[in-house]
Length: 228
Image: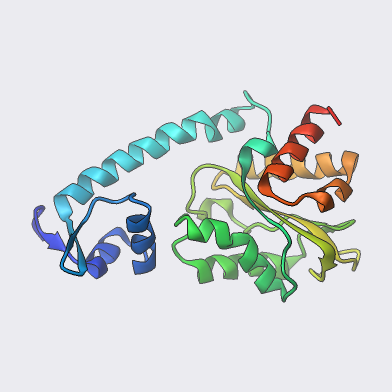
């Protein structure tokens, strides 16, 4: 290939090592340089190279704003700041279906290029030992955080007022889920510790009254600041 070569959608997906659907989502979100020729999308390789370099620099700077600060211990874990989305209520289903619902916001935003592979890793972790820690709470995550694609740490909260079967260690239904997503082992462990400590002190009951992401965010702020 020469740098000014024009690429098709399929060729661009192959060049970026992502699925075609991921490129399509990036087009829809105006996150990738392209142009329409007739009813087809076309990409210039040299422009993609410049865009990739800029994106890598932006991600490194962004990671310095949060991930590195958390790793260094210079900032406290703040779940309300890490909240990516909330799913209320979670629909009843199998363990994999529950995990799929929790991962859906990350997939929709193009942060996970291989949804099936990601779900497989989440399920593999559950098969080792359930992340449902008892008392109605589960904290799903993949075994090796370094395999996550997204640099910035985030969580997705799922709430099931009626409770779902998630193979909890106490064999009780799970009502509150925190899907943890980070590629830093240090940040991963700090988030897990913070969640378990927060819920040990406050429980999950208040979350069952949440109706939106805003409600979850407000409740997390109250719990973390002790302003309840």
